[in-house]
Image (cartoon, rainbow, N blue to C red; front, top):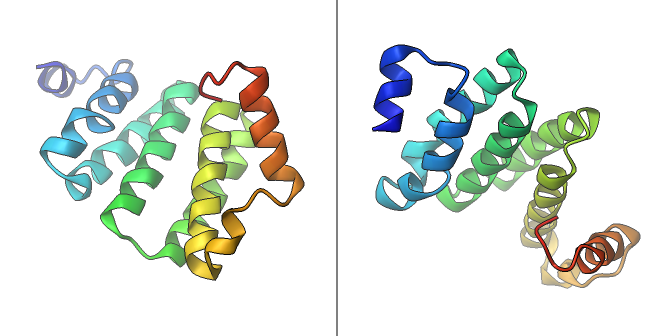
Length: 139
């Protein structure tokens, strides 16, 4: 109902958060990852246009995760993740940045081998340290 209302009324100020809530949750299980990708990308684009940076960046992360689940090329996905990560840093959106960083580790591991998943470098340690400091609340 919320999707239909947002689309019918062209209520773009609500589109990023409504699309994020629905298409990164229930829709991905009901419709499948492939069918949610376009809508998550739209949520990102509209969010950036209207200044809803937080929901735009969370939509970008959800888009990346759904793309990963759908089975897109790891090389293509890695390039997109790098692009979104730069924006997340630029706009100081650390939660989606850290989530995207975890996805990048998974991509790297699949491309290079499972040994890379071991926390060996500073970024891994920093991510773990911040998770512990924030009482295991999502980064």
